[in-house]
Length: 227
Length: 325
Image (tube, rainbow over all chains, first blue to last red; front, side, top):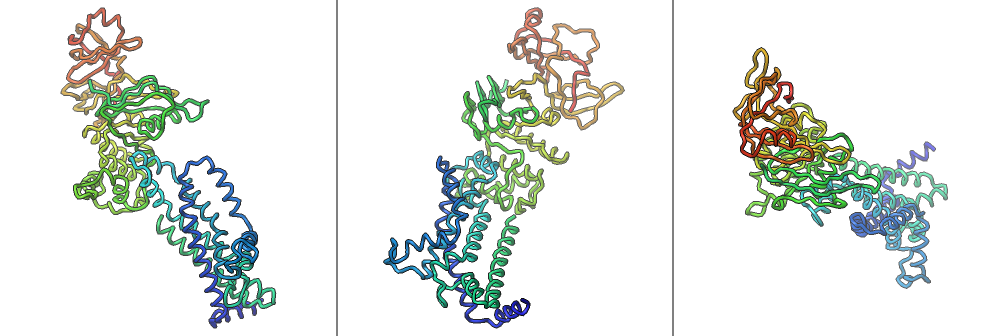
């Protein structure tokens, strides 16, 4: 095991072209899907957070259920839409990076939406009372509330990114794990480990760990700075 | 008599139908004065302030304001927006701070912050402020917001003696600038030192204390008494420390007479009746003796003594009836 770990480190230090291509694809796909999911889910979360709809409770239950949905189920759902016989089969998107981005976006949409919704709903009631007392209403009131919770919204985005960078089901089913194209860190780890090629799997695992630690570090610093 | 700034009639409020919090048939708060609302935890003080401040809506009844006066409610633990003191003021008061150029007036902000003791600290991050400093910032905002009625919820909570003294000065400043201040507190001493009127909330029902709150200072002390000076008149009180600035006398402890009485009571002052107000079982007289004092007597006494507005009377009370704060 020691030697496999050392070989994994050597692989990383030697700047192995394939490893860094896989990392690059993973990060780009994760960033793109997080961006698209954020564009959709942050406004949705904000709208729901400020909404007083009587359906809100039901929507929250659905969102919370979707948060826990297995990645392969999302993969299967999108697969059924993009496969040759599916609704969007004619677009030829299956086993492309676009398909992975669609799947990952759908995967984290409920996560970010639900987190933003909870953040807004759990705002200190004293803040709302203070703004009401100062006669601050409507969009200006909401903007000030959003200013107060922007760090938590950032944390929701980070949680979404963390989910997609570490998922395997969507990438495998919709990307097809195609070498030099849709192979990601997690699909590659699964493949290389099944082949007995531990050092490459370990090297990619280390990269995944570093990315995860890096995100948490940046968030920690920004939260501390804000506090 | 001062006109009323806030008139509350037939006000009912409950958070749940089973537990009524407030039931007020009538309550009036004088304009340009400090009114204290006393009561223990859960008696409805905060709820009442929030109803006056428009943060809560009542189940029934009405609250009317003199000339559409605007309120500002200051929470007992004021919420500070993230950022500096100045950013807080600018964000909260964006609409009321506009100068002719359409931007918040920095000179006015600076002046108020200076008065609040924040001359060098406007750029301080609010999360580094102590509880007392946060309250001072909240009061600074109230001064800048230029609201007619300022509602302070438990203003002395979590404050040290020094901060309470600073707060008292700020409240006096608000009153002196013509604002109506309503404060909810369980600190009786604080209430008596500042208030012109005190109400006690008992199970959601406000009861007005017919106390006299005389503000002045101890001018001298001799072998028997201290002399409390107010309105150019000296009251004989029990020997007291010099820091005393308020004398409280229950209106029921004030004797009204048409002639001087030879008795153990050490305070006898002449005055003119300026107001006769019928109460449920008593009559409240307001007498101008150089300072204004109220006495609660029976209808029979009013009739027997033939008291009318303008009647000259003697106001008599014991030294021990004066409580000092």
